[in-house]
Length: 337
Image 1 (cartoon, rainbow, N blue to C red):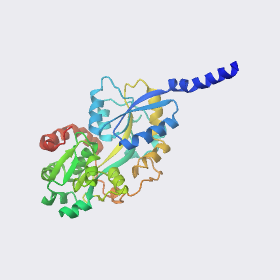
Image 2: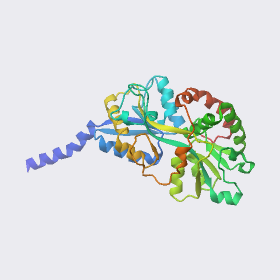
Image 3: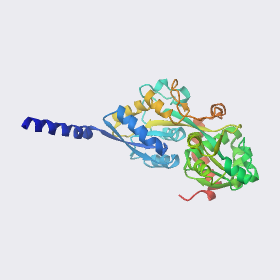
Image 4: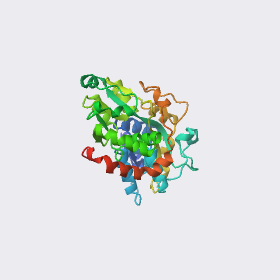
């Protein structure tokens, strides 16, 4: 009996010992809320001795927080943040050089060109128009085919879009306009668009959510959110403007100064694995790892065909200047924080 009790006691201690041996990684992210649980579950299943503690916010907020914490980093790793933000941090020597195992298999334009790498891509997402067909019929709104079509006076008060200072989707949208129209032409376009915009939100998902609920006829958002809502039955058309759409890469990086470097490296290895890529493919159609077939439904083929020719490094270098100018011109219509 004594031996049985001892064995039971040891069995009870085993899970406690395992929990005590797990390394807790603080992971900053701008992933969508519904992605956090499956990403955490998959990573912790593959890496039994690692626990992920998410710190999640919109791209602009997370980027500002990381830069503010530069002298005393609190994040071990970033998993799911705009490459524009990571390039900005790379320029400030905030990223730990590390080439994850398997990282060289990623598409060349979706990973760091440095050796060792400073960041690795996951997937790409693009700007899109969520167009509520019911609202359009009720309010006699024409179906836009280009960005320029949104300047029609009939859209006055019917457009909502993300604030690029807080939203990565907002920034990739205006950076796409700059790449396509030139900076002077883009500011002229945004001046006129501003007349039709009712509000600038602090989330990239919010405009499409607003349009799907019928609060506005047009929400400028990004592909994943628009496809998800349409697949759920929202009365929206997903419009890919024929004059070109901006895009961004979601990426991963280890923060320089992490106290858990070896564990962070192992999680970085996982983020470029086929298992992780298949997970990304449940939400996005354009993946960094070739040979993985996305399983998400409903993506218009035009997305891949209409990407603007963007230079990520140049845009990242100009990011603060562009955001300051945008705020000076348009922040009066931003939603309260």
